[in-house]
Length: 210
Image (cartoon, rainbow, N blue to C red; front, side, top):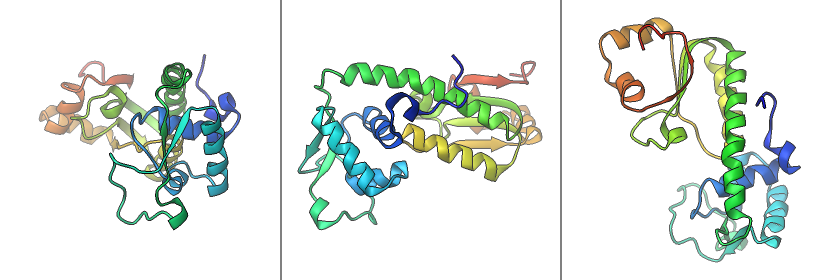
């Protein structure tokens, strides 16, 4: 099955619901307040509240009065009425593990979609998923791209993908000449990604040197 034009709302009926599930299922044990979730998924406040209630009603999400394990952004102050209300995935739900497994497969489709969209922005010589995509936190980037691509266009594509996944993506875009030079001098940054990081390579037109 191709990931082209696949979006989470096609599977779950609501963009807000799908993106909330993505956040909760991929951040097990973490809790979030309403306005933080609103910013993360780019949705309206009332829409987020409505979908949270739906998820609470079917016991997929828990509403908590305190948030003991997570430090929040300094400039992110919830309203007084929301100050003690935080939300997290209910790992004891009968649906939790099945949905978590489903979302892993869904993310494969989303990554295929991302690659296709990036390819449409210009020429790619090399593209690999690394970092948090392969649970390798020692690499300072999650997506390595080499080629001739417009930076602003790529940024828009990545931002849209971040909203689908529910987390930030650190990406590196490098021109072909710079990449070849860095490989020649055994650049530490590239070595940490390509030689030590065991990346998932999707596109490679440097097969003779990599």
